[in-house]
Length: 469
Image 1 (tube, one colour):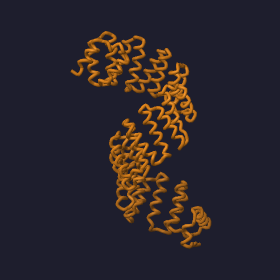
Image 2 (tube, one colour):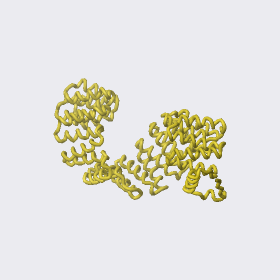
Image 3 (cartoon, helix red, strand yellow):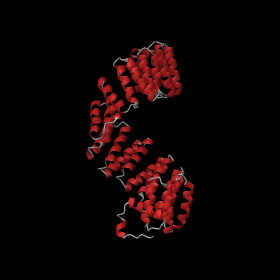
């Protein structure tokens, strides 16, 4: 049986009607007429539904009716890939490539298969072949860029992402992908240069301004970041991410009340998120408004009980309010979520120290260092645990251990020099102080903050006075 439909009606047939006709043909063991596009639509539908046997059936009929149509061979390869038969799919494509070398879909399909097989260089080679026969280069450049990312070759990935944006400057996905590549390679200056030029050419690109602001935030040029975010907001007043990152910049400038207002503005344009409440709480914590901080931290953990930072934030607030038992309870709750976080462990150790649990604090500091021996701040706090007990030999021993991991850290030189002066080992202390000042003269204030009595030490006064001479 052959069914022929008026050409003008074919475009009006829904996929459901095509499926019904095809199933009817199978049940009758007949041969209906389907044009090429209808067969392709059927294969695409069954492929997306994961019905691979039905795909094979459609393709068998399609290739019988249109034996010279390479598009069905390409779809056969796609079905084989979905059935975890990638190598067989490549063999199938190799056969049709010789017969139809100008068909870009062949090379695009091969490229996708090679990518799945993690043969990224081969994928790039196929995509480059597709460029020779396909007029729309934008999508192909994107695919090449992603393969270079898979190879860890971000220089070439950036090159091809830029090519995409030359052709399609409004491509939001590619703008953010390019920004990501700049970020992961620590190319903040290059990112700023690119997005400055990009926004000069396309001044109404909210995503261009947004990523320029993110790049400025990364290098702590907060005022410039805020200016960029405000341009993005001017273009789209509902751009919640721009408000959020503007708030981050304001917090970085310690403008905490303005930051709180900016965080809250995001609630006007998107559903409140736990992380936003956490950042609001952090701002209140910096303002020492601990009740308001706790209120926002509680909202954060109500929305996301696994947001460890918010539990830690509550612990810090309770510690500042003098409730050590509550502080320890909430800090430990955060550690249950992230037990190897050295910062959380250091926070717990400090709370234990303030609560008079010295032995426990010592163990916790040691555990924190076990997870991260390159954090000078943890070593300094650990040594200070014993300095506050006037056990300077033990404090000095900890700093010496720290210098094994961080042999060039000026903050450790200053602290060791302070301990040596306190212990009366002035010659060693003086030599180390000069070494510390040579590495970072600004660190001297931190030493005086730790031990104000040293400001009046005659040897230190003399060293400071003669340092630049």
